[in-house]
Amino acid sequence: MSITFRKAELKDITQILDLNNKESLWVGKKTYDFFKRYLELPNFLVALESEVIVGFIMVMSQDSDYDSLNFLWFKQKYPSFLYIDRVVVSANFRRKGIASQFYKQLLSKRNGVPLVCEVSINPENTESIYFHNKMGFIEKGQFSSDGKKICRMYFLK
Image (cartoon, rainbow, N blue to C red; front, side):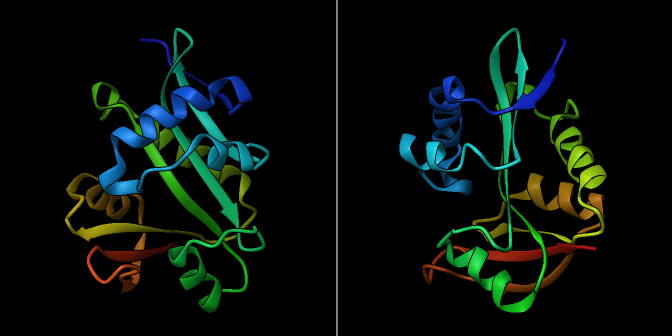
């Protein structure tokens, strides 16, 4: 297995959308236009095996034009951050270091800016909770944007 990483491109959006929507319980369904809108983000990266996208990460800075209530929760509390909006790895490629590699790249380029994200605790996303705890993220609160799904709001300095 040889995984390569690079910046997301227009030709990737169909595969990204398919991968995202397979995991919609955790990251919410999105449209082609949603991903196209954010294609220029510097930290919108894909992981590929033989030109097939097996994972992606999309990260926004605090000054991004984004209306996610989870993003806005962080924006009210912190003057500077990188918001990990979504990290998705194909089920067949989990536990192979892909998410860790995405985060390693982020950590090397963030220049001391904190990383923030949310992870669902109701319903519980056990794998993501374990991963973020292992990476050293700490809980800074809990939030529900819809009154149903509850998220743990994570912060890494």
